[in-house]
Length: 330
Ligand SMILES: NC(=O)c1ccc[n+]([C@@H]2O[C@H](COP(=O)([O-])OP(=O)(O)OC[C@H]3O[C@@H](n4cnc5c(N)ncnc54)[C@H](OP(=O)(O)O)[C@@H]3O)[C@@H](O)[C@H]2O)c1
Image (cartoon, rainbow, N blue to C red; front, side, top):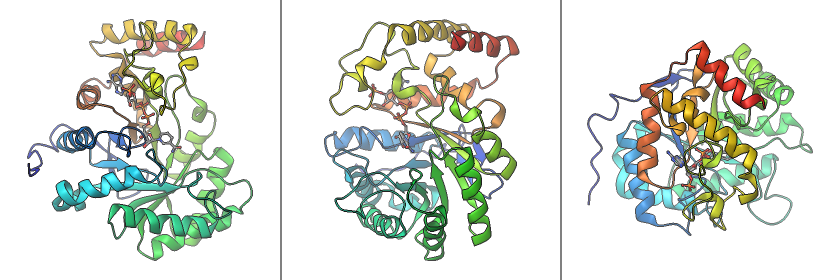
């Protein structure tokens, strides 16, 4: 059936300014790392994209290697852009990345100008797009001068193949250097995409300060720690879960007794706030406005609906924050 977007789609979503830029991002964005690949059900993917857009999630995050197989999430998304979202392209922020292994030989991964340029050309073809809104260096490359990687991002913007550029998983020093190089080139760094959740707080030791000092936005990936910070694993590993899937990136061995004990305590705290644990975990990532957007994944429509409701209760009392710290510190 032809898709007509919900007329009320902008009324309940919160849009946050991305650093000092002119771009606003939804407080919740949707990533296509899992559940949108060639091995997944197209109709489920379509339903999730439609529902997300109807709820005001205007930002969709991809990478060259998302699938499996690699490239298939971009192909699926490209097909959906044609059939469902063509009239809405200018209402969407679409991002992709290059950095991880994509094809064989010395030019199929990391941060050379050769790889980044070729990979983005391939991504644009797969998605049927003339440009992406944000193009990322997916990971720092220890063997390529940062000037070359940032120079490639700058050139890509000048060629009109991306409007903005980002970096992902760069540490504080690498981030500061990237910001400085890009500033000199005249293409400011828009955004950093780090891993961040109640169970992974490494960016609090430097990266967040560098971003704040330089007016750069951030979008936190795995804010639910791949589902651990939801009610999914409270009573073991269900068969319909990422930890149980052979294509999942969450090992069953990561669902430890110690983690589950913390998750159970957090779950009780969330209930006292009239929230689900997933909702509290997202509100926590967005607290104090230091993160522009929480980048969720989903395997079904109901998860997106539940997660967006996190925005109904973003405030934390100091007692609640202290109780969370207490649970996390053990
Ligand atoms: N830059 C990078 O290097 C990098 C790395 C990883 C991810 N990312 C980006 O971040 C995005 C999100 O990553 P992620 O998928 O790991 O994020 P996440 O939000 O931490 O985990 C998503 C998973 O949690 C479960 N889930 C979500 N909502 C739930 C709910 N309300 N109740 C129960 N379970 C729920 C689902 O797993 P089930 O399948 O078990 O239902 C879902 O697939 C990716 O798609 C990608 O765009 C970027």
